[in-house]
Amino acid sequence: MKITKFEKSDFDSLENLKAKAWSTADKEHYGEIQPVFFKEEFTLTAKEGDEVVGYITVICDSGVAQIEPLMVDPDKKGQGIGSALLQEAEKMAKEKGVHKLWLETGEDWKAKEFYLKHGYTVRADLPNHTGGYNFVLMDKMI
Image 1 (tube, rainbow, N blue to C red):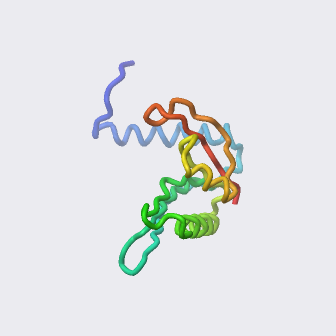
Image 2: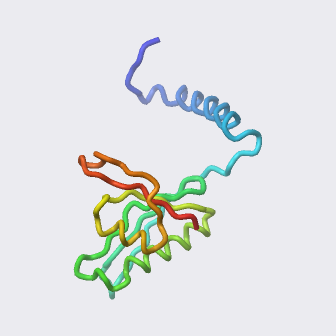
Image 3: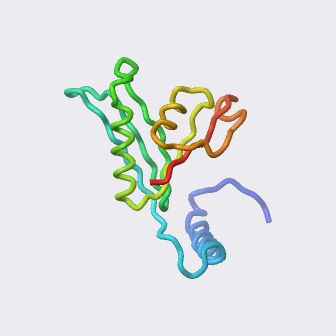
């Protein structure tokens, strides 16, 4: 056996291995009745006139969705834009079959308090995470 960098000529062989290995792993992990696997991403924007003043991107993956990210124009914060985006994103995610949303944010950032206010729970501390800063993992069942 030798370890090599993936090359385009390896594509078919790699796809065959993925199909075989994932099929075996899925049966081992989930049994004969398996979840419906899907992946979809969407972005919602908040606008004032033609100007985008906020956005949220949600990555749905087999019933669980990651918020990545939710941003609001700094001059417009405190006007309910973030809350409106989050509520609409949760609604759309649920319509797509998502049962839980999750995100990472800074341990002492204002965003953490925002998500707590909207029913998210801190599930894990992530010390020395992105950029060496402490983060938390948060989620919410919908």
